[in-house]
Image 1 (spheres, rainbow, N blue to C red):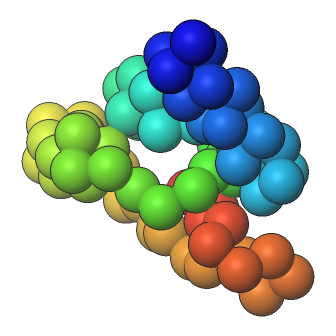
Image 2: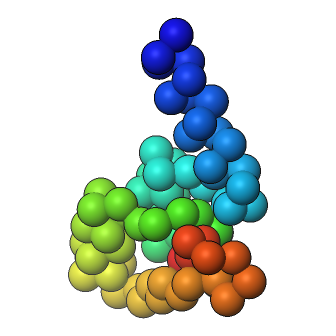
Length: 80
């Protein structure tokens, strides 16, 4: 029951932020964004250390630049 409650809470928190990616997906998207042509973005909650590390290495290896901005309309929501 505790695991199910935790999973439901996680989904509800992500939905409340109107985030396109949760904390488990955000770092996985960085490599695809770095390799994509043009501009890419997604919304998420607070960035994890894995995501910040992925951004650091993607910028170094793919010669791209990421920006992270807090969404002015939704507290706790970030746009990468």
